[in-house]
Length: 230
Picture (cartoon, rainbow, N blue to C red):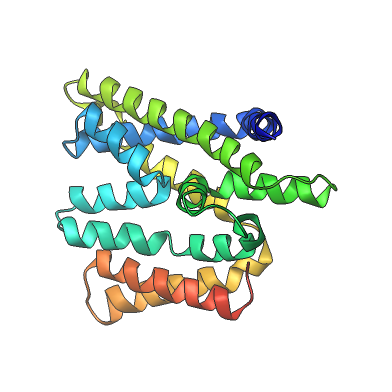
């Protein structure tokens, strides 16, 4: 039994390796951004291991750079990841009957990439589940932490990253993350709802951009739930 679990976890890690290349690229970009915000390499690595949410980490760090404050940064990051509630709900059978400690472990290791890969393999008729998901997530976690630390260390070795145009790496990385989250026309309504609420909050009501993002994230997640977007 233990060997079959190990084999399934290894399959998940091995088969997600091509996707891990993309994770490494925007991990390097996030490391550069975090260094500009004043984070050390150990802090960047610790954040990656504990949070393990690229989009949330990037938006929270951007808020710190913009002077929004720690509370606004944390809230913005949390709201951006509300979609993971829908992701977890779509694979609730994976956690059914599991020991209590496997539930938070699996939730922590679940990302858009290994979730989508597991569903794709199931659609092909393979009976993959928790350990496949965890193996893929563990692979991505290792790649993410390593690449963010390397990016931060590289940035610290350069006196002025902005002079080399490296501050654009954040924008490029966030665009790449947003593109990876797009699953097709079913996402259009939630995305437009989020965009509309952010625009109304910031330009219509005059709220700070960080709180506009919070409201937009909540509105988009609610719309996705109403729309039946798993």
